[in-house]
Length: 444
Image 1 (spheres, rainbow, N blue to C red):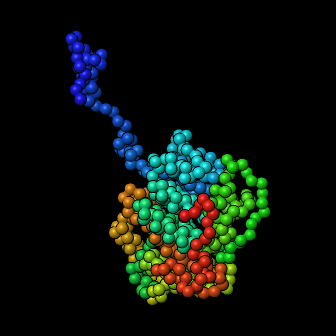
Image 2: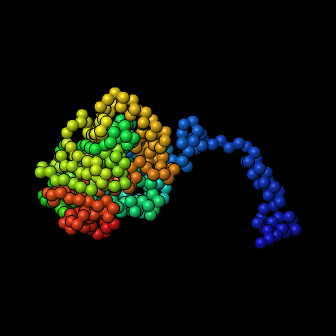
Image 3: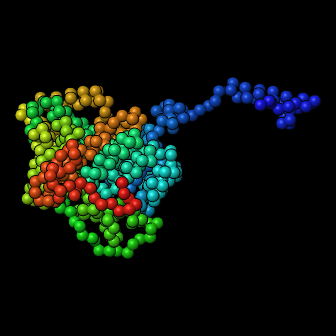
């Protein structure tokens, strides 16, 4: 194409004279000549992080535990929360106020439907999921399908089939995923994991895994009494239930009373076993498998159940024996080591093991680059696209041990599980628990 045609007076057809053109060019040149003042924060200087380097986050279902993790994540300088989705309006408003206060603005957006939020917000990089147990896998899978990375609170699956679906979805869509088994990234716990892994306790023969000292392994199938249903804009009860079978509304469910019900919970075994089985399996290099034998115990909790791995190592479910929650113990031919929440240093069978644990922890951090901060590990991996310490396979294999232990208690007999086929061995009755019926439209 040719440029504008000039007339006899030297004026282009655009109405601009050559003098005008030269003046415009001169001003443009002056603009380039004068230094542009850019705030240091836009360049990531003075300890700030440039906006382009920030991880943009949203929350899904942030109740008390979710807000605890939100408070843990928010101070990270390269993280900014911008939205919250929750089926309960009171929760949406509560979390928005918290995020806005931290950000110093009123920009946090609220959504009743998390899929609408994620589908319409391409700026969101990752989500924090802290719904009730029944929604963890469902929300994680749907978020990853929509291109988001996921930090999911535990227990992160309700069945073996759900766990496998999380693994396959993360792989198919190339997403970073971390399950909230944060003690895998805490110094005292990591010390005894490494003492066990590195053979400093001799040949490990027994692992003891803390299970929650409340509730039961048996779960209720009963419905709570029906109460008047709130307006849908205050609580979307149908969405709160998600893929679970429908039941009438009772406000107790939405206040934590869902625990202890089969449709919603993974029992006292899953409550802490989601943590401690991962910790125990990490210490015996069994994060790519699950226990193969489960011995029924005649009590309501599973306390004392012996689970056995193909290696012969036994992991015993235990309600007491530590000075804090989510405890774990490794016992070997040459020593033992134990830790629980609140331990500044692990309990070890000899003073030499204490110094050795500290050395191995430093070596682990240097070799792997993993921080002793679980959410920081997630954020680092969002940027690097490397695997998190509690990646989907770790979650799935350790939760499969949880699920199999529950099935053992529910059937009131010993069971055998094949971690390769991911099914119970020659046991059609047990295999019915590998999955659950799902209610449309929440089918994965």
